[in-house]
Image 1 (cartoon, rainbow, N blue to C red):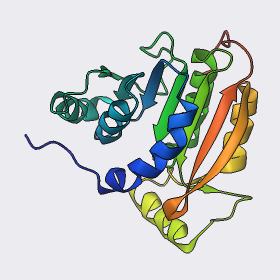
Image 2 (cartoon, one colour):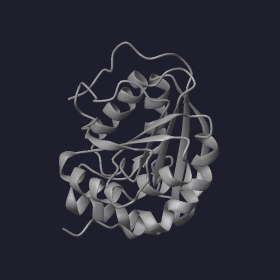
Image 3 (cartoon, rainbow, N blue to C red):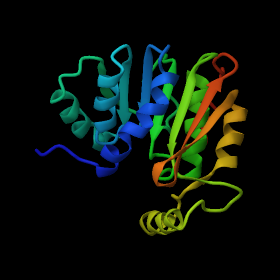
Length: 208
């Protein structure tokens, strides 16, 4: 079986690494939510050998992620686990960073709520949450290409779409996650870097 491939992963991996490498320099274990093809996991784990990089995604992606890991020879990647952000229990006990790329705009709003609540539940004080992808600001698109992308997304799933920064920031604040930086990235994308200001939340507050 041919392993999956994403051209965008090849195009954005170096710009993303330039931002996350210093953020994760003092981390030991990162959970990637929505590992997709597995390309990012292999590249980032190889470039940051001090980390244990934990992959996760919904069931249909697990085989492809394993194909990338098995062919990489990179030792510091943990085998992918099935993780649906809408489920009440995540199959991970503790990490000091969460990374997710190009996932938020695919999710329904309720799934984004669950993702942010899950991060608030899982992360301890001082841990990091890093989100890569396109965002709107004040309800407006940042580019014509993002507006076209939104139309394509909604043609596939009317409940998906580019999320407002303010929506994400509000959920972050509710989960004791403070915005450290909002980075401008190529191709009209951003990286939002949050840091946990308090310890783990006792309840995740999953929304169905």
